[in-house]
Length: 228
Image (cartoon, rainbow, N blue to C red; front, side, top):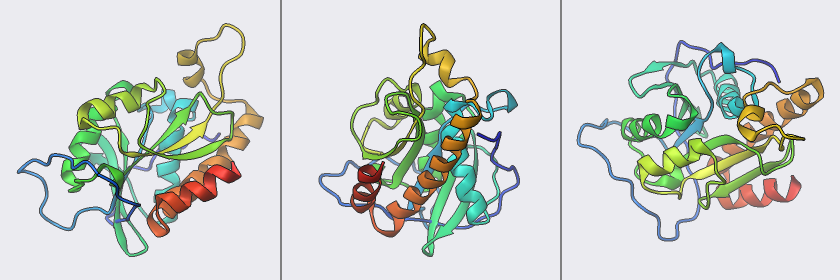
């Protein structure tokens, strides 16, 4: 998997839309949030900041938002929301992309601020892209709400937003063999064959994010989860 870091220097672009809406929870918004057009989707790619972590399994979510920015002429820049962020247009909708710079275990601090900045009041308009130990390498799943599977980034986001109803794009990185710990494993860079497979699934994950906007999360889950 190539060592891609979201490019700093951001251009503004725009938003997205999600899914079906049974009993959606409303996120609390501060009085200081922006008053302009809210983002249709906030897409957050999880990882750790800095070259030391670029290309590791734990940073695969950041790889996906970098792909989306490249596809749609977005340019990341540091923001007051403790993230590299930018805006793109998908299907003529405003979409915010972000890579928190807080380290994985504190991702929620950044996401809480991003939610306020982009006027997101519905957790189903948040898409979190992340690595998943419980899925085999190269497996892709789209999920709406549910458990956190012990992922510290997801735990932090749920704690700060007071909800687990946000959408997830889960990318399988497999489990370590032998006595290696999961914590050490995800901070390592994959070998050549695995990196090639993960590079392909990152492109498919970016496709899935676009699908959530264009056809909705239910249709995207049906297409992605059956195939992979």
